[in-house]
Image 1 (cartoon, helix red, strand yellow):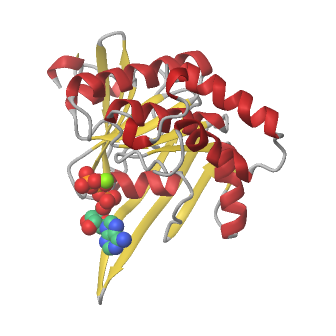
Image 2: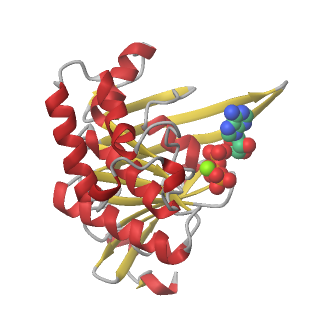
Length: 267
Ligand SMILES: Nc1ncnc2c1ncn2[C@@H]1O[C@H](COP(=O)(O)OP(=O)(O)OP(=O)(O)O)[C@@H](O)[C@H]1O
Ligand SMILES: [Mg+2]
């Protein structure tokens, strides 16, 4: 099973009269449990791609499958239900509700889940605040927390629904390097322990180096797929226009990448 499968996806935006092609013929798939970075220059389509995977937005054409289920053609209500059960979000600017405490922020997405009792919600809040090391800060409001602590609350909130996938758009961009690194290590620890799939976008080479899979986008197209084994990256060039690649992010170093290996810290 693929946790995410994207087939020939295009996304256009209309800007007045002008059509902006944000994504062009993206074909990609990921296995469950990956720790995957989407990298690329500003404006290349990273956020657009995350929003499509997260079912926040829908493609202009092409198909997206989440856990092998086709999500195209679903109604906004059906997509909201899928998100509430399957996908956790972490944002660059944390997006916590300022009037709610850390615990209430973590509980917030669970309120949509009518199948969860109050006790179960509170059990999860306590559990995930503990996982991110913030049990003592449960009653603090966001403005009483540091940036790194706020992002930890956001991680606990994303995890509380027990998602199959956590999507994080530039999760470390508003943090200093040390805090950003701690947040990334926390995400990785959770990825290993809970087997949650993490897909995050980033500009930061140090963040990319922590991933175990890489998708590089340039100008709305995939230019490179990579996987890391120990400290070594292997890459497969991917140019849909040249007929190359089926978009499957490799689980073993691709044969095509022989001679194209380099150490993570040289990228
Ligand atoms: N709502 C929108 N309306 C019109 N154009 C948009 C919209 N959202 C994004 N775009 C355009 O789509 C392209 C891809 O944008 P996107 O936000 O996905 O890039 P990004 O890789 O996330 O960039 P950054 O690193 O700066 O966050 C850009 O050319 C952008 O201007
Ligand atoms: Mg972006």
